Image (tube, rainbow, N blue to C red; front, top):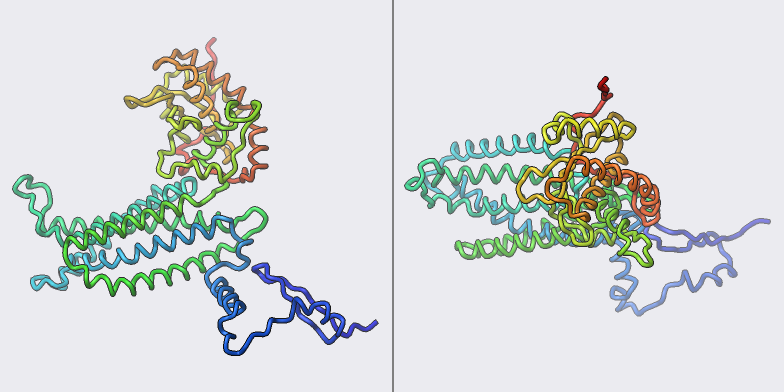
Length: 488
């Protein structure tokens, strides 16, 4: 039988369904009339009907949002981008004030300044920036992924510090501290120091922000049921940033000429920096990460192990959204916190060497821990708190060869279990070595029984148990093959 016509149903990248008629058929066209026929409107209102606005919105969405939105990105993508655009707008406005201050610091408007002096100052500032990039990449390069939210927010704090230094640098020339202390820079020297520090901080901001943004982009491109395009997300983000920055610059050129006094400059700078930091904080707070780090895993394990939190004594499994609402953006990653009271109950350092553990623990404890954790991919040591007023134990973890991300998670959760038992028992400040060893052994047995069930519940709750990074950077050394000798 020959087919004279057909109606093909298609779905575009945004999920919109439309029909295409191939050939001619009265029956098929009648069936699909309600879906394919447009509503006729008078010619004078053709440009103001709902279809025109829908087409305009579809075009804007295609330009600034990734293909397949919202199915190709995570649900928190749009909210983060909205706050991110607001903070970029505030940053572009405050950047104009900073640029004007930096130009005045280079000598623009000063009859006694020369082009050579400005060139030397520019070179000096560039040298500080490049050295900061090299040093910062060494110290922070492998630390950005585990604490993405923290470093994303800190990057803009550093950037705002640079903006403030640039803006107020012209006023440093009137400061003179040489009468009170000849070793403190004053006047033009203080201005040069401020400009060099500003360049170094801006370079550090670019390094930290670039790494944390890459981790966030990878998160946005990894929804639960599909996979997005990281390259397209970066391209669309750059497109939006260009429009927002251009709008801020054009608006700033109309406003900045009226901000001439010191009071108006400080007032405008305060509101812009405050708006920038607030928008950035809300943007980071809106991100819902599904991978493990120290803080998120602590919240999950503490809640899972707390029988009082559940109904009828059952374990409570938090979703990524629940954990995101309880995360602390600015926190020290080595701290171990109780999920219920949110107080610090201990400290843990991952990836330390056995040589360093020997400086914090006695020899007998190190030998017993090496022997007890002989079959584990990590070795755990419990040391006394070093600083005054430090709560809970100080736990040191050394890893063995061929350890993985799951082994880091196991070591961190084991340390968390020890700190929880230490806190629950109200052990005196200096427990005996036998008490510490019993605590390590008992928590290890409990941890081994509960870990498999914990990971299964986390997977059902939507967590990505295959990805996680507990340790910031790589360990200084790993244990190869410890040799133990027994006394005769």
